Structure formats: C-alpha cells, structure tokens
Image 1 (cartoon, rainbow, N blue to C red):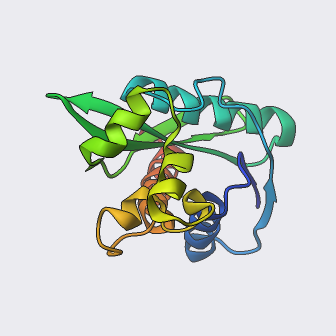
Image 2: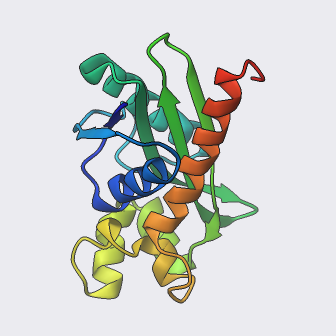
Length: 174
C-alpha cells in the first residue's frame, strides 16, 4: 500500500506512520510539502478543517496514493477563550475525502493575545518554551497538558479516526 503524507512535520508524519503500521502491512510512505491553501495560522474550526482537506487533496494530486493524508492544527475562540483545534483528512483515489477532528484544549490568555496580534502558534510556543521547533515535538498540547499528551499522540488519535472511517467506507457503511 502506498501512503502519501502532505507534510514533512515530524510530529504529524510520525503519527501517520505509527498508526498505519499498526493496521496495515507492506506500506510505503512518501512525504510531500503541499499547500494548505488557508492562513498560516488557521483561526476557526472551519478554516482548520479546510486546511486538512486541502492538504489531503493536494497530496492526492502529486502522489495518487491509496491513502493521501492532510493534518492541520489551528485555533478557535469560544466564549472569549482560545482553544487549539486539530483536523485531519484522507483523500482516496476516487476523490472521496474523509475528515475528522481531534482534541481541543485551552490556550493561556498570554498565548492567545500573541495569536490575535497576528503571530503563528509554532513560533509563539518556541518563544514561550525557549526551545526550537516545538511543533515538531511536544507541541502546545505537550506544554499545556504537563507532558501527558504530545503532538504526535494527539494526531495519532485523528489518524485512527480516519482509518476507522476508511475501513467503514470500504465496507460501504459510510
């Protein structure tokens, strides 16, 4: 099975590879840098979902694999509080796109202010943690869950949901 991944982000690629290897054998992975065609910092569930779908479809265009993944992280506001939101999509060769959302968690107001001012979460988290490339490792979720969940684990949950939907689609349940 050929699996195409629409990012080179280490946390996202690890999530896809970890889950796929659990459920399928003889898998070949290929990573692509594809556009999300949304803002660098998506600012709603709708925009974040669209970014994941766009990545999956753009991956399908360049790879035409059996499974073409797009994962996207963003933020949204609810009742004056800012939450991280995460979406995934898988595009199939017939053009079908399956999508789902994962964990959402509260961001501190100091971080939210930076994002509202136009900054992107990844660099803000690097500054906050005094580390480099936080988005490739623990991510904001790792920092703000006291290390109980890292970014790879968060995206693994989304990939499992996508694989479950894919299996139901194959069985004509979806």
